[in-house]
Length: 200
Image 1 (spheres, rainbow, N blue to C red):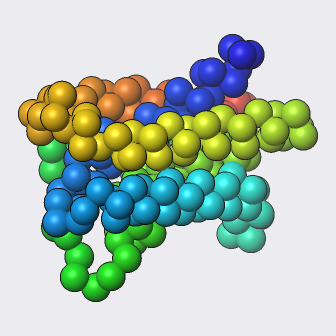
Image 2 (cartoon, one colour; image 1 turned 180 degrees about the vertical axis):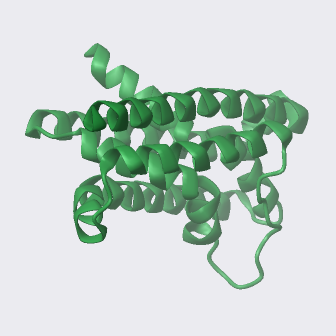
Image 3 (cartoon, rainbow, N blue to C red; image 1 turned 60 degrees about the vertical axis):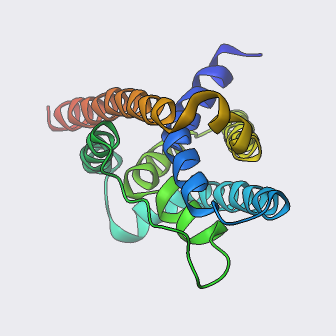
């Protein structure tokens, strides 16, 4: 497995806030039977992949339409991502109870719980960084692997809950927040450096 693929896969996996998503999934599917939980897990993973692929492919076009520079977006996305990471560390991120209005796989599990504003911003930045067809292929593969891994976590949610309990999942969610905070700092730093170099 190429080092670039593994690095991108890990970034994308943590961007999807897997342990917070798992905690929210367990809360919102508490009244479902095992078959319903599995169906919801698969649909959630598929929705996450579809949304993030769209962001990966159309990020450059969004920048072009609105006349936003990549470095400016890096700074904005880094700030939002940092706020999201603080919420994760403090355990304050939005986690609604089970919905009575039908399917919860796309909304709110995929969007906005898993793919929130910070993740959207980071995905747009990453998509703009993948310039060559080879880089884009690696990005798509890493994204598919990250979404599939998250899907497997959700499919194994009952077993994971028995092993780790809610307190263990909360700790893992906080650790995820720390990783995302570091990624936010890196994205913001790259944006500031790029704007300084462009102005010099």
